[in-house]
Amino acid sequence: LINKNINISIKVQSEDFNQHLEYQTLRERDVSQGAIVTFTGLVRDNNLGKTVTGLFLEHYPGMTEVSLQQIAAHAVENWQLGGVSIVHRVGLLGINDQIVFVGVSAPHRQAAFTACHFIMDYLKTQAPFWKKEFTDNSSSWVKARQSDTDAAQKWQE
Amino acid sequence: VNVLFFGQIRETLEVDKINIDTPPKTVKALRLLLSQKNDQWRNVLNDKDILVAVNHTLCDDDMLIGKDDEVAFFPPVTGG
Image 1 (cartoon, rainbow over the protein chains, first blue to last red):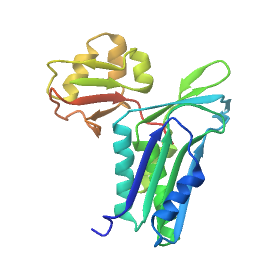
Image 2: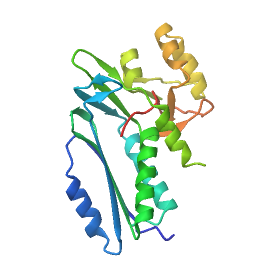
Image 3: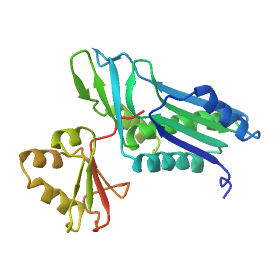
């Protein structure tokens, strides 16, 4: 079990996160790593041609954390990594707010890039979160995208 | 068994949680039981895209369920 010491951090929270602090934690936790790749997802002001004024993010307490942990563990099994950190926000979010952070450290860049990409593709289609989108005069639940399903599917080929 | 509903399903059914003392044996049977409530429930629970989790793990209709299990019905996920 070469990966037994890998540090996986999962946080689901309504509060905002500090991207730099998350990065610093990954960086300082393991000085044997040579690369960190991070991804941050934001609330856009538009979707499918509509002006968006905000989002509500619902989750399944208990299952969401388990699901994120499993996705991170899956990444750790597939690539040589030092640490994985996932932060996902829930509740009401405004335009340009941060939604999700994924940070991956690894000895070399390739594994870090690939694992970060994998985690986001899986998170999008596996982790139980649901977005409700607000426009000026209405709200609607965001539909799952086929392109996200296709992206996750590619990792199984 | 505790049955939970999330997202659009929770909103459409206007309920987030129900408890069934003597649950049927499988997810499929639970779906059938709940579908009998009314047209609204039948439409929601027969939607092919709906996902089911038993004790926090995604599963299919054949999954066995017991009295102490937690079953959740929800739409395809849209986080990230």
